[in-house]
Image (cartoon, rainbow, N blue to C red; front, side, top):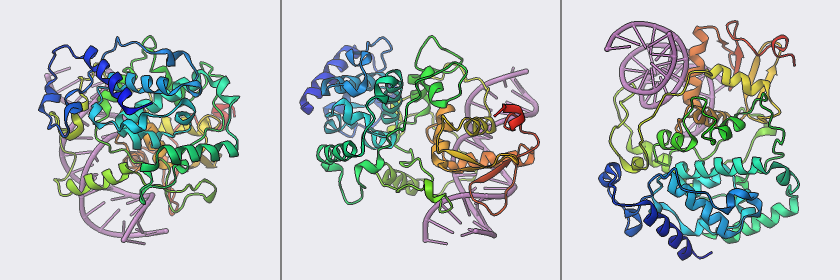
Length: 379
DNA sequence: TGAGAGTTTCCTGCTT
DNA sequence: GAAGCAGGAAACTCTC
């Protein structure tokens, strides 16, 4: 698919979506680029899905992928000027091999995450098909070649091999029972407008929680030096990481404490801002979220593990991934392990958690925590 | 509408 | 030197 074709689709979408309504936030931003920057996509909840919605993503043609991206560009008010058209030129199989990090590095945190969620949802929907098409090692090599060829421009010295960023899920759960716990399921549930459990729709979730800047840590894995070797993963660098570095330099000195959130548009913040409709219900606290990950290891593999189930001692294996998951649950794309761990430390006082001295990424449930003991869970 | 709980964000200093 | 931990301080969101 030529990039001009995508431009055409996006232009058409834009034309359909933009009557004459001005967007205050958008108008106030400083447009960095030419024409495309002037055609930021507004949300259109009525926009219809394409044929891609009825197909296993693995079967998508380049056209389907393009339409799928276009759909999310529309719905997320993504500024099309920020899109690298070359990134949109791929078929479904190639797309399905891409991890969240890869998508984020290609499309930015907001659109990348939305695409990732959508893709995972669609993959789950066609889980049976997907499980039948698990990739062999040789296929992975082949894909790596495809990726290398397709995205050769990403192979700057600072960028690692592409396939290192690709997470091939060992299996997609096909038995999505109502009672089973899986945060992935929970997020996919948010996609259906009917299943309004008090959470905002995913689209709104992204619009409200993503500040629009590409601040997400590019790696979801904990790079802790104390991590179990078996779970250690190759660190990789992406442009998003560089962005984080840049940003941190810019915001270096500031007053103590949490500054008020900017109300007006700043930088990339123009992507967003429909007012949060209704707050999310409290429901799950952080420690419950952590507990639920631990007691359902089959559906949240590799994120955390029990060190001593009897004593309630557990360890973060992928601290940043857990933090990101928590951030998604709280609609906060800038969640990090550092922040999460601060919240964890507040639990010491309330004896929901106990300190485990001298061990990194290791915590222990305290006497005021419930629901994790074998007697309580039954397994 | 205000208080309080539960984070979230940022920071400094310390330890590994 | 980097990453993680500890905890103070203040801001923020949400519930009651």
